[in-house]
Length: 181
Ligand SMILES: CC(C)=CCC/C(C)=C/CC/C(C)=C/COP(=O)(O)O
Image (cartoon, rainbow, N blue to C red; front, side, top):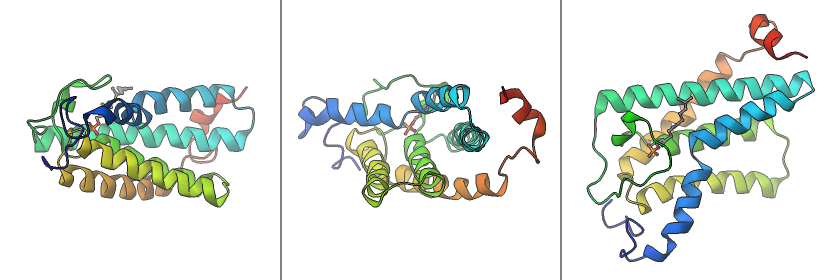
């Protein structure tokens, strides 16, 4: 993992690519996804869109909690070559197992592919984005390879849980009443 951390610092082998890697990092961060989903929810005027966005919000929150619990239990420190200059973190983010970005990337990727009708090139782009976000975690020196692989597995599995617990106006009428206008 240390050898793959080619963007871990400005002086690293691919240090000039570090700013780009950090943009990719923000694209997989929890805050833009949570705020974007919440904004979409407030703006949506169709009940079908609201149902999908409410479930995405639920999935993102579940993911944050699950990753925080696992990080807190495993307590694996981030690689020593990581510079702790990440965009907004919470206390457990000093730990690295599993990668929250990889978990979210896999979860969101499955969610989008399942619930959005997209042309094939866009579907490919979504998968590529999830892979690039995951690979960039190791390149930035934020994670070991195993943190990212487990994160991807966890996010993939978490999507199945979200599908199983799918919130609908029938199963959670009070929640949907909050958002109907
Ligand atoms: C509602 C609430 C508590 C939002 C917090 C959003 C937040 C600060 C998420 C942390 C995202 C983050 C930095 C994850 C760490 O990702 P790794 O891939 O480095 O594990």
